[in-house]
Image (spheres, rainbow, N blue to C red):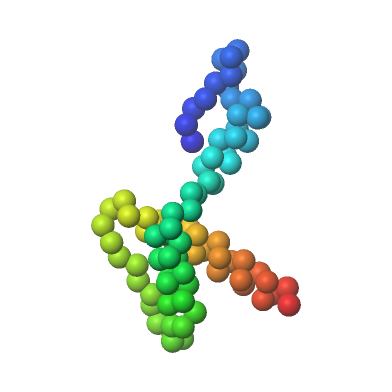
Length: 84
């Protein structure tokens, strides 16, 4: 986390910390990333049991962002299934 200090030099305020955490969690929806995420989710849902789904590509194309979004979607799906 980046170091921020309040006007009094006492460190970040609660409001500043809250805004920083919200910013760190924010991901802007990019049309291509949304399309690739849909394709990845289809690949995961249609994959044979015990198989692997790999995402490869050069640095900076959004693999980590894609993984994080896919984790959120899969976690939400599993929680819904567990709740009935």
